[in-house]
Amino acid sequence: MDMTVDKMAFADSPRARARFLNQRTKKKVKEFLVKQRGYKRPDFNRMILDLGRLGWTHEKIADVLPVSGASTVSEWSRGGIPNYNNGAAFILLWKIETGVEREPLEGEWATYKYKIGQLDMFEDGGLCDQIVDQLDREIES
Image (cartoon, rainbow, N blue to C red; front, side, top):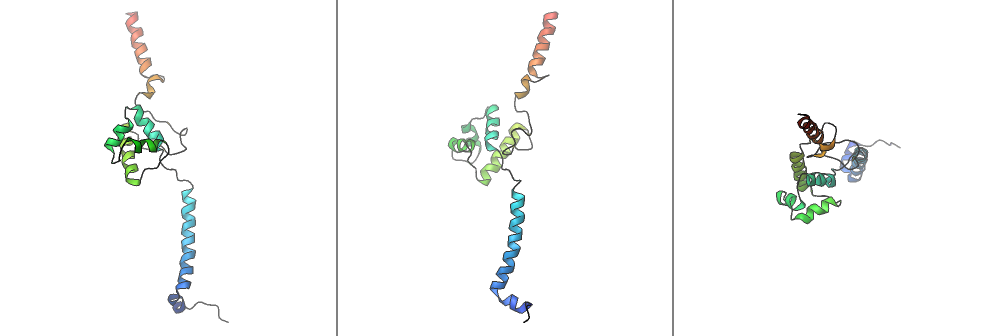
């Protein structure tokens, strides 16, 4: 019995084509799932907190973005996921306001730091140290 697949029979048989495509599709799906393991979505809650430190309220964010209202932004801060267009617009707003190019991703709270607004005010050489140095110089003179 000949077990080879005739090209014509393969071309005419939808079941044979489906089986072949199914194997190829399974391979692509497996590759996708492996790549997806490392994917982390943007951390919208952290970005909302960062904008809050810069004086942005949920209402102000909602006015700038194409969303229905502040309740939508509040939902994002509680873990809701914006649709693609609103999420992209929010990320762009966050990048413009903070000046940080790399948006924070979920699960990366402790992996990297950036400075927002006056958060560096109390660090070594920050604004407080500069004011204390200036006051010391004025007291001495």
